[in-house]
Image (cartoon, rainbow, N blue to C red):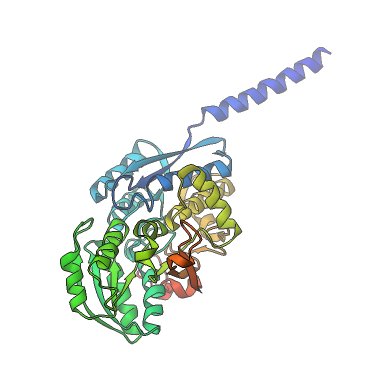
Length: 401
């Protein structure tokens, strides 16, 4: 009996020691560098934080005996601040992976810090094609969309439908410039013409002079190479000037369902836009959205849905690799197809581009909508290998030619 009791006590002590050891392990920290207070707050912001925490909860809350924590910071749309936050997260907070980094200039700055530290960084909100080209890194992933895909899906469809002359209103920073460049290339290649462009400061409130130049160009399409609050203000002010009533079409080259909700269907109806995700696509997207809305009171944007998917994909790779080592985890992330509510058979290429289907939508008329957030009707599904830049054309130094 004494031997049995001794053996039982030994087992209890061993289990207790194992639990204590697990509790002594530092948490696995994931860092979100977000726009929490400016023109991209609705696109990413607190919704991206919520999506990341949902992914952690669905995964089980811990991995390799470590609790998983999500820490976030507001970059205020300042590239130098984003770099400093990334540096602090890696060096002082011991963050293993950074996600989102809304806006391209901030993303490019944070990417350099991640490369220098040999850490994984996943971009969900920014769009500049440079992130998977000149600025690519061995542990960099561009997950949701980019300027090439947005231009390719929207511009090609517009020119094919006869909207073959363009004028651009362009946000004067990396993302806007790349979006104008990529869309112009698609328009010209498809047989259209670019009649001109004008650049505006980021987060401007008055588009009147820019819209008057676009109106005077007589272009069939005014391409909005901007995002967030800039896109919303440009669409609203174009309506006030009667530009669309005069026969010109607006094409927001990057718009989210939250933007359309802000503008309203009366003003936004008929807009053509490309998206990587829409909440009302199928049962999976609707089920995720229901859970997301219980916390946020709004539907997820494609960037926020991409945060959920990418964080979950990262954690699954950490578990499979049995380590947080960047090289081991990234290898599994690239080797493992992504199948969830965000993407089917998604694949991370050697340049860091996550390739998945993209969608062309038209904004519904008010009479076609069943209620708030019922904003889109699907016009086309574009396979990922047709939507995104071909690997053969990549300017990423890591791509073997």
